[in-house]
Each structure stands twice: as C-alpha cells, then as structure tokens.
Image (cartoon, rainbow, N blue to C red; front, side):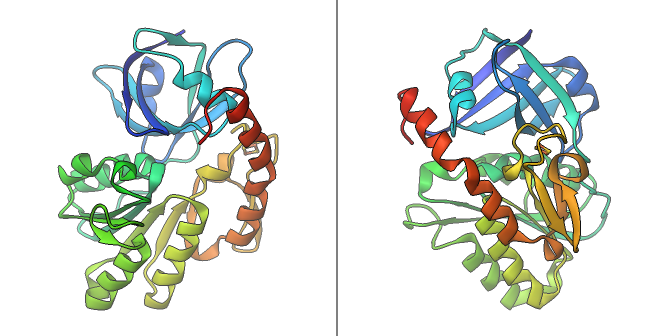
Length: 277
Ligand code: FES
C-alpha cells in the first residue's frame, strides 16, 4: 500500500497528491508516468509524474477528476493509502540541451508534466520561459512554482481573469513574432487541440516542438491499443514509445478521434458518482 502524505485541492476539478513511493521516487525522470490502482477492485489509471523528491521518497501526481477511478481517488485523504503505484513507465523526456532557451506551453493539467521537465532544464543551465493557460484564474496551475526558475511566466485565460485574455497560442505567436531566434525548442503539454494549435504556430518558424500524448493513454500497459498514434507515418504507442513525440510528426486529428471514444462513458460515471464536471 502507498500512503498519501499530502493532498491539495487545486481547483474544483484538479487535485494534487504526494505519495510515499520509495522505488518510483528513486528512479523516475521527467516525462515518465505511473499506473495507479486505488483499491484491489480498481482499474489501472496512468498518471504523469508532476514532481518527485528522492530524499523524502515521494512522488507527486496531479489529476483531473474525469471518470470513475479519478473520482474514487479524489475521495481519499491525507493518511489514507492506495493499492498500487507502479512505475516509472514510459520514455524519459530528452532534456540534455544545455545553454539553449526553451519555451514551455501548458494548458490545464498539462502544467503538471511540464513542470519537472522545465525545472530539470533550468537546473542544467538552460534558460526557460513558460506560458500557462486555463479557462479562468483558478484553472491556471503551478504559476508560483514555475516562477521559481523561469525567466518569464506568461499567463493566458479564456475570460481574461488572469494574464492575457485569449489562448496560450495567441501569447506564443506574439512572442515568436517579436524574437523567434531567442528560442531553440518548444515543449507543449495540454489538451490535444492546444498542442495541435501550438504546432500550427511553431511550424512556420521551424521551432522544434515536443508534445506529450499522455492524454490519450487508457491503461498504460501497451496492450489495449487505445494510445495508438501515427507519428511520422509510423504507428506508435504513447505509453510505450512516448509519451513525448516530435509535434511536427504527430497526426493530431487521429488522436482526437480516438480520445473521443470514451467521452460519454466518463460523463455517465461522473453523474453516477455524484460529481458532474
Ligand atoms: S494506453 Fe493502452 S496501449 Fe497504450
């Protein structure tokens, strides 16, 4: 069993948990994920690693309550335990680009997996900036934590309640129009439509862009086929070959079609558990 040592409600849909998981905390790297099972009857849920502390032997996960299992997880409190916490899984992000400037773009809970990637780059001497987006101020995640190591933290909200009114892509376009040569890489993590639109902005500038396809994973085992995606004309599995891929090569339209398959079932589960999102 894995003890929940800290729980924080970040907004009405998103929560953070710090889990005591010594083996995962020792081995994990930014870009990787874990599979959790809340109890012995629970389904396997892949969740990206938002942070880790090798000394405290803890791993932080940030999750959105989108279906039955994350709703069950959200009913757990500090001091409770969860059944399984397996990992680290997936291919670590390639972050050995010293003395370059990287701009990160995060939408919603995408801020969680982006955070350890940008922090590691900053620790290696890379200059990093970030654009964080959300529908309104409460949905802009981790801005204070990014500010600890980012040269600039730009914020965009749909309703203008924090930062620029508009999308992260509007802010990104403006930044690149001003000084594209200041950046050598973009890392975008968020909803598929956001990552697709980020690539639309960066491609004309030929700014190499990595995206994370963790939103399309279902069981994270390489067996269900739910995360199958075409990258550069080849079939890939996000949970085995990724979750990070070259954004210029991803077939986003195919991903979005597949992600929609279970939307109605998740909606029904939320209603059944009394949490309508
Ligand atoms: S999530 Fe099932 S095969 Fe990747």
